[in-house]
Image (cartoon, rainbow over all chains, first blue to last red; front, side, top):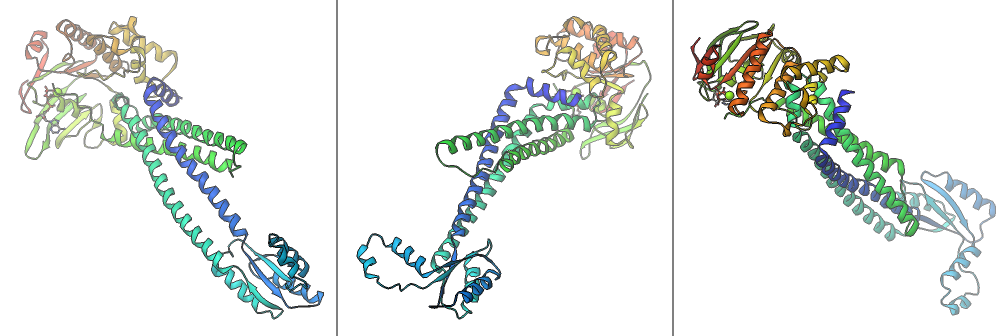
Amino acid sequence: MFSLREALIGLRRNGVMTFIAIGIMFFSLFLLGAFLWGTFNLFGVINLAREKVEINAFLRESLPQKQVEELSEKLMSMVGVESVEYVSKEEALKKFQEEIQDAPSLIEAVKTNPLPASFSIKLKDGFTSPEKVKEVSEKIKIFDEFIAVEYGESWINRLDKVVKILFLFDILLGIVIGFASVFVVSNTIRLTVLARKRTIEVMKLVGATEKTIHAQFILAGAIEGGVAAAMSGGLLYLIYQVSSKFFVKFYFPHDFIIIGTIVFGLILGMIGSKLAVKTTSKEMKFESPNV
Amino acid sequence: MIEIRNVSKRFKKGWYALKNIDISIAKGDFLFLTGQTGSGKTTLLRLIYMDIFPDEGEVAVAGFLSSTIKEEEIPFLRRRIGIIFQDFKLLKDKTVYENVAFALEVTGQSGRKMREKVMKALTLVGLSHKRNDFPYTLSGGEQQKTAIARALVREPFILLADEPTGNIDPEGSEEIIKILQEVNTAGTAVLMATHGVELAKRMGGRFINLEQGQITTK
Ligand SMILES: Nc1ncnc2c1ncn2[C@@H]1O[C@H](COP(=O)(O)OP(=O)(O)OP(=O)(O)O)[C@@H](O)[C@H]1O
Ligand SMILES: [Mg+2]
């Protein structure tokens, strides 16, 4: 209780220092939270694109219904296959006509239906890389009911490249922001502890144990880090609310971003002050100035 | 209560800040530690409250030995001695009362008994009427009185004073020394480091003079 009271009194009576420290930590934790949020959304977009990856397997003419059904079941049971959708000749034609709507003369030219029926096969997460898609489609090719199997190879290759670059960039940015915020927060905390060096000195002078000295500063650090983190979490949430009302509805995993930021701020505040008090207290000597 | 046996302290190789010091301080002694600047007075006091340790010899304080004391035990040694400095070392974000109470609170004391002890110490130095003032509103003498109250609130067996009047005008200094004498009469030993040999002689106390780390007069 003494430690908590002293921590609060210290924060209040050194108001300017506390204010500046919380401000700096708020800013760097906000950056970190915004980065995490951005990363979540980036991966959301990538997943959307990946869901578009599909294999089209074109069927021979006039296969009996039963054979088609059996084939569909066989495809379904293959490793990595998420769903199998049958596209009949008629549906294929309709799709084709919709796609070339702008050229009505072409539609008329199509008297008989030259398009084959097909299976459109979606793949599970983790099977959408170029190598995996190729692997699965090679296996599908083995069935001789199909005249052709294709999957937009060049498009998938390009997507994969873009994803890899984005991923690398994101990780690098994450490392930079992560280190920067750990550095800024722990240094800010260290400065607030150093500003109260005299308190540590007096505590040692009157016979406080290291535990008592540490407790007060760890609590103060936790409060500063926690408040700063709660503020940044709150601001991120506000931005999310406003943007989803007026612009885009971003993906916002509340628990992860808000609670994650607060826990991070608390822990950083505590560890930062613990280390700072420990070294300050260790190096403390009572040399009064030699006048 | 304090035994300093053949103690030497070096900060640099081959150069002694203190050399072959033997002092013993008994209950109720009043002892001046005189000597020019750099003669080793502060170093000797720091050895007693075990902020530093001797390179040779041994310091024994209230049953704690410099050779065997553990780091975790130092706070308990500090609780048995009161220390004041030339620069007061008050917390400027605390009132006079809070500065004194702090010394008891850090060891878990609280409540009416604690408040009574604080008021008793403040009354002793004649500062109870300024208990709610902050240190920066006080004169140097009043700040040192606050520091004395803080040092005494735990009822130590000895008060160590390192140049306690160094930042205080002559009248204020007289007052501080008078308080130290009263404290001594009440049974607390006092060891006061000071430049002023004349002052020590005038006060008629026992004094030890240091010259370049060695005792010259007993
Ligand atoms: N931490 C240290 N490192 C190196 N030398 C030191 C250290 N502390 C003290 N000294 C040296 O030891 C000698 C004694 O210093 P000390 O502070 O004990 O003198 P003093 O008698 O208290 O002087 P003053 O009257 O000016 O306070 C001085 O020469 C000083 O420079
Ligand atoms: Mg000195």
